[in-house]
Length: 150
Image 1 (cartoon, helix red, strand yellow):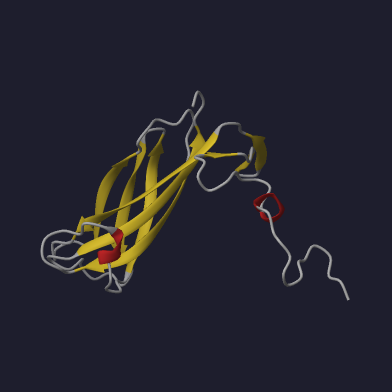
Image 2 (image 1 turned 180 degrees about the horizontal axis):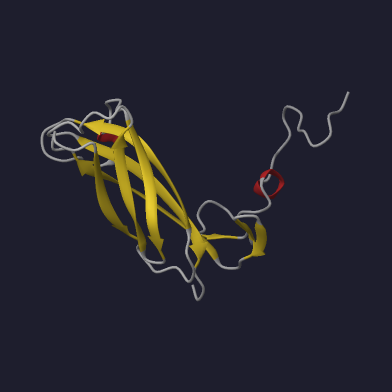
């Protein structure tokens, strides 16, 4: 029995068969032009995705901290920003890379004040406790938007 739109064992799958909306992973432009702004569908050309990570430092006195994030370039229009908490760091010094956030943390991450050149992140304790003194609370993010002329 054959299942429509499926592959059998041993079938070679090309990247265009798996996801025709995106270029190869070594490209930095997305071929997709579909976007929804609230409930209105839109077509946007020259879409690019950038991503990164960062952290805020707890002081034991506040339930949340904010930090400004600046994109490596300016988008032509306001991008969509996705953000996620990635844990806490309690080691000596500050984290050198994303792998250092090994402790679970009761935090949420919010992106707001989204502009063409960056956004502000807010890290909150969801249990209303203060962010621990000496802990770094990590977040990762992806921004997708229009960048013409590349």
